[in-house]
Image (cartoon, rainbow, N blue to C red; front, top):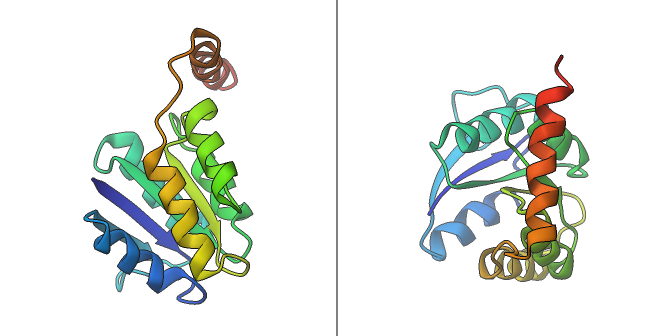
Length: 150
C-alpha cells in the first residue's frame, strides 16, 4: 500500500513511523519535515498528504504534528478526506470501522513507540463497516461537504 506521511517536525515518533510503515511493506511518500524540499509547517505538510489521498496518489496517509490536532484539521479541509486523530488502538479501529477514515492523525508528543505499533495494527487490520447505517453516515459526509461550499 502507498502511504503518504507528513510531520511538521522530526521529533517523537516521526522517523520511527516511516521505518515502521516500511517494515510492514508499505511504500511511503514523505511530506513536510520528512521531505528535504517541502515546507514543514503542519498545515502545508498535512494538506500535501491529504491531497495525495484525494487524488489517488496514495491509498491512505498518516499525518503528525505536536498534538495531532492541527494535522487532522488541515487534512480534513481537503475534499474527500476523513482524517481521525487517534490516541490508542481502539480509537483507530473505530475510526476505520465506523468512519471509513482514510487518514490517521497522530501526536508527536504523546504517542509512544508501543502505542504507535498498536495503533498501526488496529488501523491496518480493520476494514470499513458494511452495515447500511454506517455506510449512510459516510455518504452523508459527502453531502455535507458538497453543500457547505455553496
